[in-house]
Length: 348
Image (cartoon, rainbow, N blue to C red; front, side, top):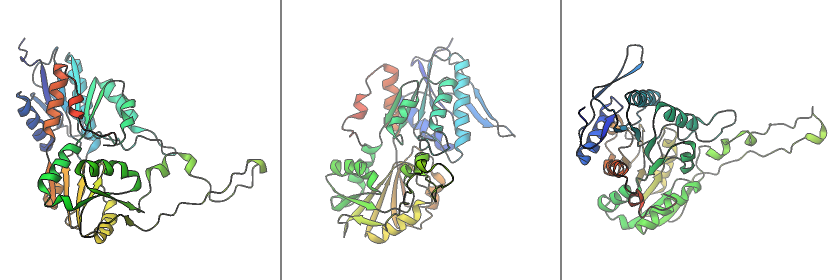
C-alpha cells in the first residue's frame, strides 16, 4: 500500500475555482500535494464524488468554502466525508472557513435551530473535528459532538490596517450597532484608536425575533377568562441613524461581522454621508456593492467573492491560508493550538 510519508491528505470538496485556489495555497504552505478527487454535479443536480487515491488509515482534511449555492456546498462536504469514511479513512477533519447556517443558531418563533441540525449531519457523515473561523456565536461550538477550533481573522485585518491604510493613526473604529461595540472596542484597543458607535439601524435586531415571547397580540383578547388577560406591549420604534462619537475629519473603520447582505446598503449609504471617509472592515462578504458606495472593502478569502470583486474594484482580499495551514499542521502533529489564539481578546 502506497501511503504518503506525511500520514495525512488534504482534499478540496468543492469544484469551484475559489475553493481549489484556497486548497492549493494551504497545501503549498504545508509542502504536500492536494488529494486527487473529482467533484461534480449530475444532470439532475445530484452531487457525485470520486476519490482517486487510497485513504485507508490516514487523517484526511477536507477544505470546503461556501459560495452562494450554500446547499450544494453542504452536500459536497457531506458526500465527500461519507465517501472517505467508507474508504476507511482514520480521521476526517473539515476545514470550513465560513460555517453555513451559523446565523440560524437561535429559535425564531416557530422556526428551528438549523445550525444544530447541520452539526448533527456532519457528525453522522463521518467528520470527527472541524476548523472554522469567526463563528457567528461562540456558543455554536456546543452544538457539536466533536472538537471545534474556532480561529480568528482579526490579526490579519488589523495588520492590513496598519500596513495599507495611510495615516491610520487618524482613524476611528466604528461599531455598526451598540451590540457590536465590544467587538469594535477590541479592534480599537489593539490599534490604539478611538471608538464610535452607530445607533438606530433600520434592520430588526436578532434579539427581537429570538422566540415567540416577543410577538404579543395586537389587541387585548377579551374572549378568555378575565384573569388570564396579558398586558399590551408597545412596539419598539428605532430612532434615526446617528453616530455617537467624534468622526469629523477622520478615517472611519466600520467593523461588520459575517456576510454583508443587500439590506445593509441603505444603512451604509446613510453612514457614508455622515463620515468623511469610510473603510469598511468585513470578516466575510458576499455583497453586490457594484460601486454604489464610496468605500474600501477589506475581506478575507474565507468566502468566494470573485464575481463581486470584478463588479466592485474597491474590494481588497486578505489571505488567511497561513493560519488554516498552521492549524492543520498542529492538529496532525498533536501540538497545542494555543499559539494561534495568542493576543486574541475574548470579544474577538
